[in-house]
Image 1: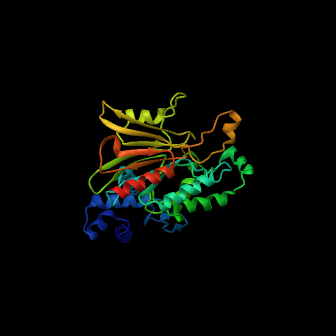
Image 2: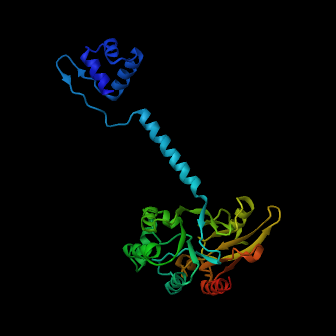
Image 3: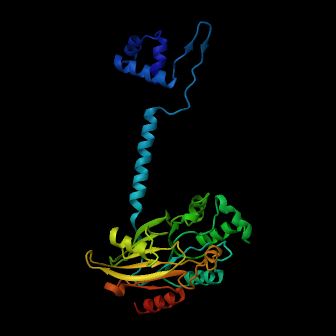
Length: 337
């Protein structure tokens, strides 16, 4: 474009002469001049007394913006599609365990660190045992809730130091991390993504993935911080609704509400067996719940699914509300495999 505008200027701003010199069509030259004027390229702004210099625009043209938007859309679409039932491949046909760790809230005074420390060690030391972070790693208070930091003995700096330890430094074999509502506040998503192991997906609120074994067997997991739907009579109303209305999965797992429940069922109309999992999390003391008079459950901080790819039907998956028992059962199953 600059070459064409230079020829245009050299020919006394005669478009026909410039086009002949360059060997291009007159219409092409006219279009070049029009675009150049829009972009401020090669066009002197002249007044009666002054000639101003050529100052190129720092802004992208409409055509360039459209091109960028098209590329950006394609990348977002490809990234979304790649995460829909993404395949996480296991290198052995031996049974494995997947621990769905409920909301840790590691900096809260009510976090049951003795139990969490025990579970971290079990996850590190038990062969074939993996983990999914259901979300709400820290309190990460925002807005009016920032005042609650005054009652916490752990600083925000210390909280993120422990978060980094859980996400990257300890030897837990993570399958994925979910962002809960607490994680989504402030800079939580960026800090979690920055501190997580590079290969481990960090998903906003929910993740649908498949665990694929060498023998071709697959276990589909739909994990979410929570599923839509509430019932005072059924703590599994949300995941049960998902099992009835959403895409089929072998496990529907969630947390968020600081209660736990485990259910297995069979959908006769859609012909599949499924597990519903809700993990209570590690926040064992909840001052807000105490103020409202709600009771606090003692078990189910995490729920672990032991998966045996060598069998079919209800025997393929067994779920445990205690990680220690799950680890013992998994070890026994792997020794027999």
